[in-house]
Length: 398
Image (cartoon, rainbow, N blue to C red; front, side):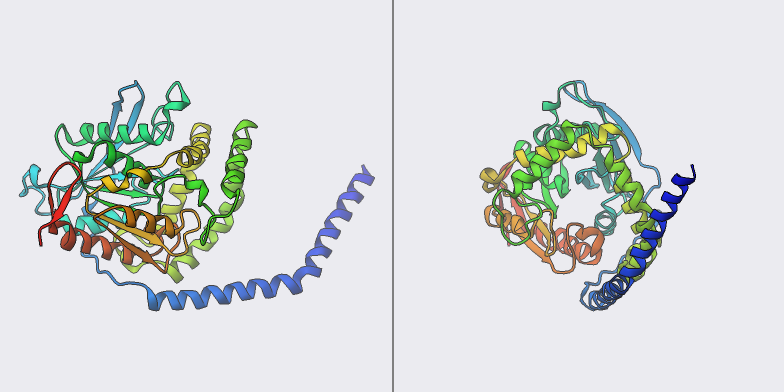
């Protein structure tokens, strides 16, 4: 027993000695990082866009309506429906109210990633605007189908049509389809399968397909990089190591939680704080990261989602999508590099690309002012200049 205590004491002393010896390296490193963050925050404050929000948090109901819908193959989907409120909500006819379909990024739950988008669209379209989102099959509160082959982007897109019908009724289209990250591929597939159900699109930080072939390759594609990532994910799933995601999240949680106030102070949006509270960033990230690890089913679906996004592609059909489309890419996006959206812009006849120099993969969270401003301009100035000629063909009227 004494030998064990002596060994433990010796290990502790060795660890303390190692830390003490590394202090001359560790302290300057953290000092340089802190200085760089401060310099970037000052530069970001000068460079970031400005957008004034007149809507208030009262325009958004705290608890959205929950709809449980049984899909064509028996899978139960959880749908969330939220309607913007206001003094004039009862003056507009139901047929005049706009419908916005939100296609979530991989691992996101509910409306958590779309605060800036919802605020901007509510300010434009006003009370009565309906926002619809759903849990993808196998994720969160939606069921997992009997066969994993039925969990794919194509089925998510088919689910979107059923979700829209269940939430707003037969014959109603989505005036705006919004997609972020994985949601971009789902939105593109939905528009290709059901072009008549889409009025316009806002697509952010995503790609047209084969996501892992460009992931973590911000400048050019690297040989075999996509295969290495695919093999790593397959190994994790095959050996049942997905639970380690929760361990990583729990270990990182204290440090991340401590950084929120500083990060919000340096990079937070005053407009978003005014509408959604000073802790909007913390709620957003906690909801996103916590959602991924909410249960074993979702963690497995999260990893399999990367495989499905890599197996899926719409590039060869993008020329068919004539819908007015706003593409927003982050210059520093490592997960879905901006050049993917440049390809989409070159293929889609009525698409406009915005590359934001102040954000990475989460432009709507990192630089919400720019995103809200671009959405406002797109929906008020650009969409109205197009006339629908057929289900997927639009032409400019002036």
